[in-house]
Length: 360
View 1: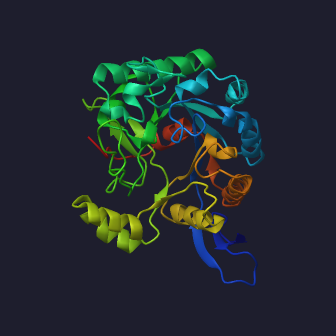
View 2: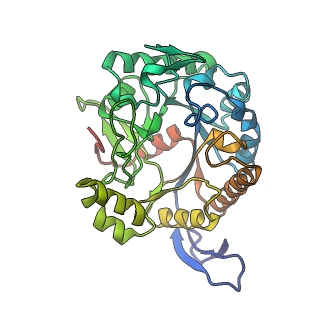
View 3: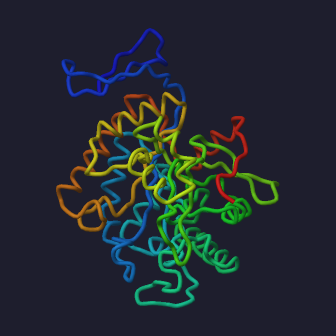
């Protein structure tokens, strides 16, 4: 990434290029006050390939990850599942970082690993709701599980969580009402432009965010008395015009949805060994051009070899770590503002955000 400062210190010309002599993709950016967020879904090893067991080896590399964040002034938000609240590996370190103001701890509800269990399985799994979306649960069971996780975080870390992400992105209006009632400030479960309808939970298909707003907005409780801030995950289509043309049609049939996914489905800002890091840097530039927050999302299991679908080998894992350092470096060079999710929500809440509900 090449950078040329202009006469106006808030305007910078950025170029994605390996050297000054290569073809460059550039943009003139107004970098004044754009938050940079790093959210980590902190959960069990290979939660999808081995749902019948819980291992937490990946937590042992969180000190290394936090050290990388701190080196670049990044304030990550660790969104914790229930099993991670009681794990010795990583928890003590995260607690110390939180108390030092170097990270935030949030609420990430995997309903199949959070008590109470309807059908207890081996190793702390609720077999009745394996890989279910939280919107599928009966009201009382959802509230009990959400409350259990909240109280586990309070007991382990001595703090009230203020940020939330639904497991498998499955947020609904009931969740927002519960979050507001329990004094949460922010949710980050919406992935704009993406449909998870072809993903299945216990008995239902996944949520759809094809028409969801990309920008932060208020999302109010069902009675419209109070609101929190929704900060969507950062996602951009590779072919914007194709995406705009197909996203409404994609809701009408399965084959149009498949066509949208193949040709124009947005990609999230997240590390992946199969992607070129320059694509991530270009996404950051586009987000800033649009005045949107830059949110890098990852799973804790992607930080250790052999514990996630995209980091099966040491080579893949090394690529993830190199991408993280490149993205953190780019964020610092661009002058983005590192902050945790709840601080970003407080920052946006002072602005005149519109109220909007992406789902019912």
